Amino acid sequence: MTKRRTIMIFPKFDNMHYIEEIRKKYDPLVEHVSGHITLAFTFESNLSSQKLKEHLSDVLLNYEPFKLTMNHVTKIDNQLGKYLFLLIDEGLDQVKELSEAIYTGILESYKPSWLTKESYLPHMTLGVFSSKNDLDLAFEDVNDHMTFETVIDKISVEIIADNEDSIIDFEIEIRK
Image 1 (tube, rainbow, N blue to C red):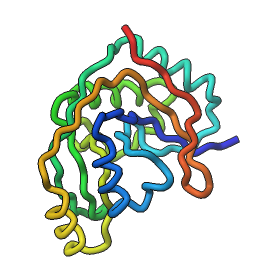
Image 2: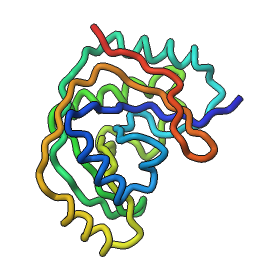
Image 3: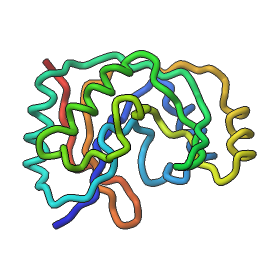
């Protein structure tokens, strides 16, 4: 059976409620999925959860929990759309390396052709907009320089339901 999946990090910030308040205003997916950082973009496959879990467990053998700090909001306005992103400060290299490692073996063929080490911008989406004006107004509204810190010690695999709800298939701890 084919499933739509995404592999992600769900950071557990002490002050996460600030992010969720912003997302409630500007992110249409707020009711479907919690704030997250995507490691492997949505892909359709008939891979079993067990095969995927084995692959990710093998990948994570090379990693240990790491500190993640996010504190910079930026506007993205390109051919893919208009977005408000919260960017990673500390932990960026670990997230990029982890994403690259995930896209090996059984997941290599699911790596988007546009995704390179240079093009991958790990982030948490705060908002999605249809106009530049709405994007600019939201940026002014949220640009208050808050810092969000946590330790990343697990990754999550979600199944995306037909109604776009995120259903956690499984999670794997990062521990070395």
